[in-house]
Image (cartoon, rainbow, N blue to C red):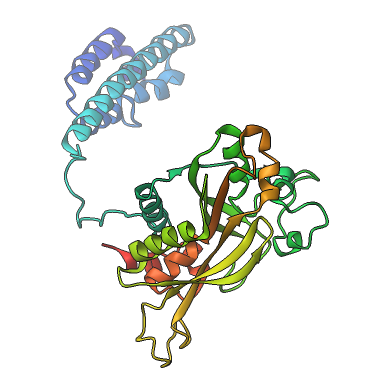
Amino acid sequence: MAEVAERFDPARLVEEAKRAIRAAASLAELEDLRVRYLGRKSELSQLLRSIGSLPPERRAEVGKQANAARRELEALLDERGGELERRELEQRLSADRVDVTLPGDPPQPLGRLHIVSETRRLLEDVFLGLGFKVLEGPEVEYDYYNFTALNIPPGHPARTTMDTFYLDGEVVLRTHTSPMQIRAMEAEGPPLYVVVPGRVYRRDSDATHTPMFHQLEGLAVDEDITLADLQGVLLEFARAVFGPDREIRLRAGYFPFTEPSVEVDVSCFACTRDGSPCRICKGSGWIEILGAGMVDPNVFEFVRDRGYDPERVQGFAFGLGIDRIAMLRYGVPDLRLLFDNDARFLEQFGA
């Protein structure tokens, strides 16, 4: 062992290792060199084990040289290792490059609109074609716009049928898109023809009601508007949505912000309307689709200073559930299916 220490030449060892390390072409080759020059059987390791056999006056000098050589070799190996890692990573990235413009394997089907969104767009297109413009309004609304200005003052029984979520005493999640009637009339004088689609909220939950649902409100205000104008607009809507052979009928109803008020039915499109059993109309031949009526003069009083003198202008309003129209068009039996986000259900309506 003493002979190993006597023959040790640190400069020769480091120079030899430098040439070999710089020539290494891969991480595997570099690891072989690490074992060769720093491993347990390497010349340097044998030297360090033999230092104890040297004369005392030589031990410090040889040990210092050996440790300096080890540190230099470790630094060389680490530096070359970093270079080789970067080069191999670049090679892998280049070889594994993915052309994102190629179709998937297997190709994935394209997405499509949810049937509620599709129905909403259909309704917007229908009413745009009839001369209405589409507005949107806030889902968090003041009690004044949601109830009071629509002829539903505090204590009115109609408030209990539209029980909603109160954020505080004066702010609610809107129960209908009707508040935009008042906001639209405040912003623009007559004549006014608007429809307002959007989400609304009520504390209901069963097969035909959900706490959040979608509604479309319509408002037309002009001079000499009559119930016949309302009937004509709704007939065109029904035929555009349910087919050109459809008819509608108006039945007396009640809504606090219209007078007179009507319930609107469309002739059944799923049966022969001869009284035979029908899952949709239950044999009656008619399907209820919305509520409507002539705007109550009391509503105009809240916006009289905007040009809506109830002695000079008249108007009609209507409201329909977008989700209900989607259910009827697509034969969905339970409203809650529209909001379950079950891909198996949604895929049934693909193009």
